[in-house]
Image (cartoon, rainbow, N blue to C red; front, side, top):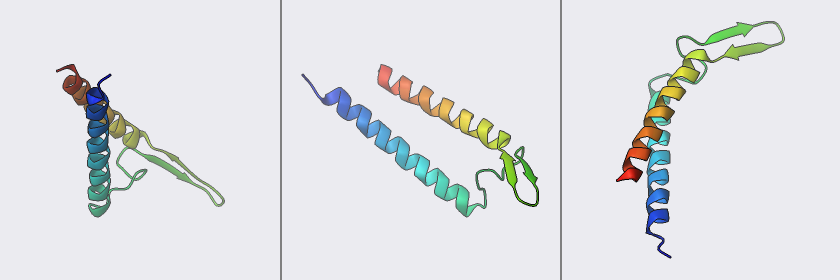
Length: 77
């Protein structure tokens, strides 16, 4: 039983997580925080705050779709 495919998958997952961490650090330095992007709805009252992160959800969906498509293309070859 060869462990090469498992090793490749773990390396790809590790690189993906490192890239995601780098993007989060970059976003923080640029002043972008989750829940405060354009398109996010914030409702504040005296005793509560409710955030509908629509813009954040759309951005996250696009990034995950691109990442998973790239991962699947790499694994097919």
